[in-house]
Length: 149
Image 1 (cartoon, rainbow, N blue to C red):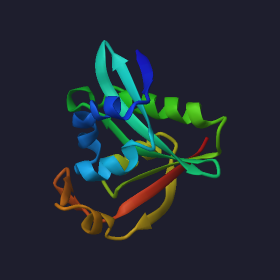
Image 2 (cartoon, rainbow, N blue to C red):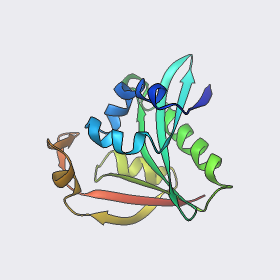
Image 3 (cartoon, one colour):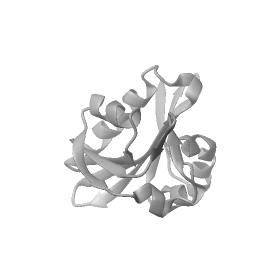
Image 4 (tube, rainbow, N blue to C red):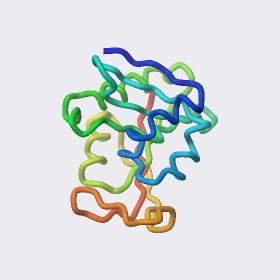
């Protein structure tokens, strides 16, 4: 298994198909793609990508984390979270992640050591063109979780 950092914006866009699994709207991805660092996890082939942005004052945020559906549940997402938290531990103190209030995604991050920070009501309704549905449930709020690094 190998994790590499991708720096050039044009190279980052090559991962758009996978990023769209985590964030369904391309213009939302474009908002953080250029300013974030992209990491790609390979285990023979590409499995997972993650974008982390520097929010200032020692705070970082996982903007997008996605694993191909066929590879989910095999620990790749968790390995990526541990890797990026380790990468930024000497540069700051806190890693945030903002995600839809999903019964699948929130527990994943909690198992990775994140705890609830705050919620933005109706974020998905106000920022996305189409309803966001996960596991048959429409998502309305954006939930922020944090972890000390």
